[in-house]
Amino acid sequence: MQIIDGKAVSAAVKDRVKAECDTLKAKGVVPGLAVIIVGDDPASQVYVRNKERACEECGFYSKKYALPADTTQQELNNLVMQLNADPKINGILCQLPLPSHLDDKEVINLIDPIKDVDAFHPVNVGAIMIGDYNFLPCTPAGVMELIHSTGIDVGGKKAVVMGRSNIVGKPMAMLLLHENATVEITHSRTQNLADITSQADILVAAIGKAKFVTADMVKQGAVVIDVGMNRDGDGKLCGDVDYDSVKDKCSYITPVPGGVGPMTIAMLMQNTLTAAKIQNNIG
Ligand code: GUN
Image (cartoon, rainbow, N blue to C red; front, top):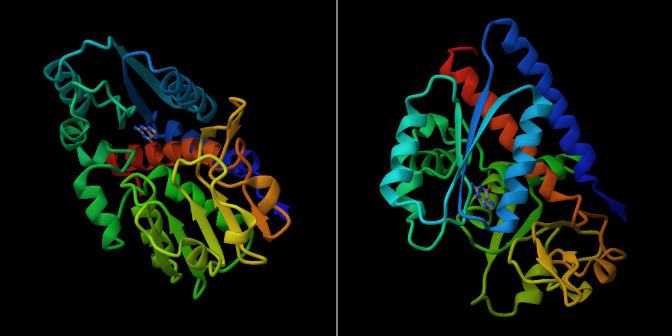
């Protein structure tokens, strides 16, 4: 079994982005990312800090908009519209989840699709569906990079995606399909789950249940990608996969932390760079 090192793969992506950023800067273009965070959810604060740090590493301009928990929908919408019109800002990211009185769909729909570096806007979601896109959603794109880093050809392989969220499961299945995998999606109503997952050459777990995937659910020699970010009984960070039981059965596995997590941020940097290039007509 080999561990897929998300830190190393993400560092390589960021190095590539930084090199391209330097080229853009020589042409007078500095990629800019605006990150909006509403309220004081501690996990979101950590994610936002990491995104700002990655911007610094890549040489981007970044600006954080930390709004109080009682921000109104209109105030949030006004900020998004202001950022849509700001030429220094190429990418806009509104950290989710929002406080419950705010409508995330309304915000996502308001972000100019060309600045939507999360690829959550319906225009970008539709573009992914038909395989003609500017941005890929960050987490599924990061998973594809991790799979590519193994050197395994996805074409013709049986891939099973556990979870059907709009952010991970559904677009993940689409990206695997684009690379000619035979894809199945499982979810909370799936029957005979272990029968399905144990046929997977590539198994992607994105269900948000600590250590749910055990060795009996995994095919010998499978590539196992763990998108989960949970706390176990002792409060320790863990994935959706029971790493200790699965690791001896698979060919490759991603750890938590240090697997998919760092990739999501690296792909956000990639999307921000793409956005800057498109908005400045640089091919
Ligand atoms: N919250 C958890 N994951 C994400 C993400 O990828 N983007 C945003 N905007 N919020 C998130």
